[in-house]
Length: 492
Image (tube, rainbow, N blue to C red; front, side, top):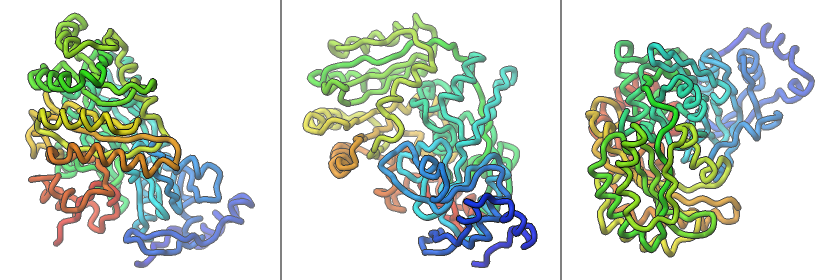
């Protein structure tokens, strides 16, 4: 593929002259990996041209800060890009994408860096890092938030809650807004207000040809439709505009914990309770192990209405058994959003695989409880409620197809020592194998993409696949952005 000339030789010479001695010494051709996995070489002059055109930094392995920049939330992935572009704004993203396209480079896109399947960092390619783009602007009168792609949920929550407002997004505060929203976006308030993508009003996107495109209901509506559940398939989003909802800073919430001996009956009671729950009720259930080694069932709660109404709504949960912990209490929403931050800390090693469920079958819950007793510590099976307002959006209204799912079951294992990786992965697979016969579709943000075939990915988009393929062909016909639950471009 012909390389694009970025600047004239005279300007390039001046750029090289302006480099520090260390930079000049490091200016050399760089081995890299192409979009299709072939070994290629990036000319030093082209790298220097790109570096000179960026407001942010362009890093290679010889630069200070490179190792920190390539680290993501899931420490199981230790990939080394050839280049990392720390983009300072949309213009940097445009120039970086133009460079990647011109050289047919393998590309990954890092927003908050919370990619469960490691797709935000690539081996030997170009990592488009958006972590420096952290702007948040709240318009309390219009109830609109404008958010850049490097923003984390905790940062967004704090700014919005300063005005008594919120957008439902996630349950871990160090998750990135961008990836979560593009894949759907479950959260503690999603049963009341819908997924994060249901609250998206518009977005700015850099397409594969480097142009900046605005997408909304009235402008490029097919792209706007695709961005709400279609993941990062269509380009790099540089700005999100969200609808905000009134929500008090103090909500009723917290965990109720039952011993494993009561988990079988408690899980059945939970399934019945959640099946008839009002939209104000968030109640997720998880089989897990506490730091003291006790295996337990945790019901994590949050009520989106008045405190006294929440007390009445959660009263049945306390009767699922005899709790060893009952920590439901009035709590700041931003604190509720942080309750899993330490357990799911950045840099630990994770195996995650999830699937949607239409119901919590008694056979499934019994099998999970029975199997869980024999699994190593660090394994969790979490039932995330997907009902309420989420389920009342038509399947074809957005790209998020799985509106009929009642729960998102996420099976995971966590460990810290690299020597335990084989055992950790095996444990995660064992717990998922129990749930797999009951699965129907999967949440792309929880997808273990290394273990999903293209046919499974295509099937997961259901009746929206053909339309997604057409949008993909319009904005990324060469499939430059394919490190995701990939939508293949429609053939002409």
